[in-house]
Length: 123
View 1: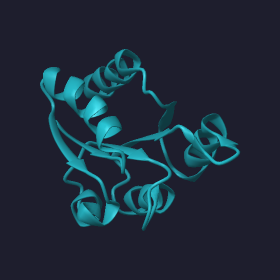
View 2: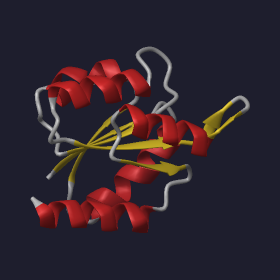
View 3: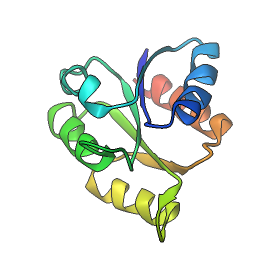
View 4: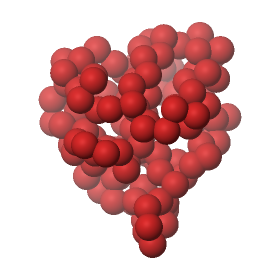
């Protein structure tokens, strides 16, 4: 199963990607949505893990585009918040616009891996 991890913070991105790889998943890392949006829209990923606050396109727009073009892709929004917006508010907004679920950073990888296994079992 191919999983996309998009985060502009290299440390956070690798902190999510490494346990996914260790669990046996094929992981593609990107620091800019523009690097992978065409592949994501074409359905090349079963799961997209997207940081909400990313310079450029931004995670919210990326979530909307993936959801519109690849409805079967599971989308996980992640955020530590921004300025005076708490991460929990950002996650709620992302879920309203199309994310399947969300995590506040640092991401609870045990919970995320459980969700991924559950999704895999449902497929």
